[in-house]
Length: 42
Image 1: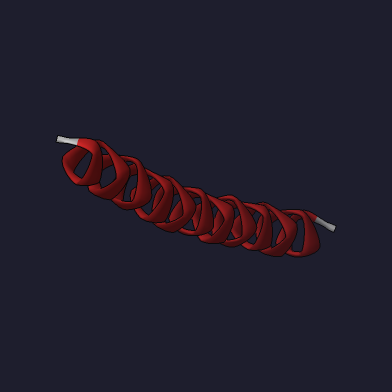
Image 2 (image 1 turned 180 degrees about the horizontal axis):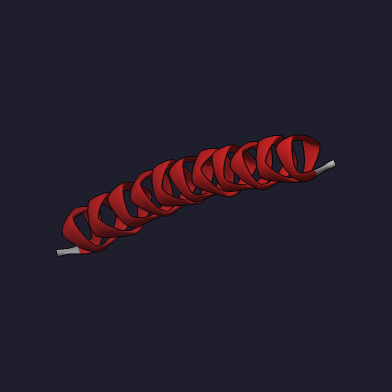
């Protein structure tokens, strides 16, 4: 039982890390688009 619990915890950490990477990538793309639009107006 303890071993399965540990494996579940590690899988949860992996999934959260994956979502963090996706969010960071999404934020970076949005930020790049916003900066490009601001520079375009200038």
